[in-house]
Length: 118
Image (cartoon, rainbow, N blue to C red):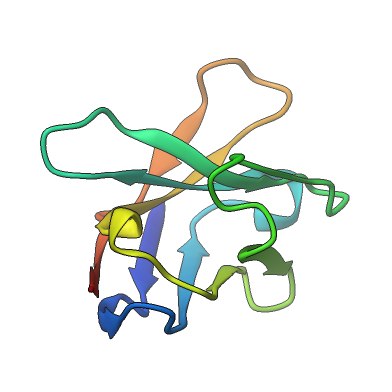
């Protein structure tokens, strides 16, 4: 059974920092691309950052220079360090694991709430 479990969300003030974690089980973690996505209330889910199995990264323009995605294959965990948080970063953040080889093979976590107060 595949599980992705996010943690690290919470309430933080404007300009603060949080570190999200997503621990995976049931997959060969090192072979999967990993990503963080977010969905604000009333909006569509959007991609925030992704990291490949070879540590290539990609970021949404809105978070470049503030967020950093990383992975630890030994711990089956992907992280996202979020600095200089803004109220517009408020959303439920989801972790996604997807195969770079098999189209459509993907798994999602249950999400963690991040709230940034102004």
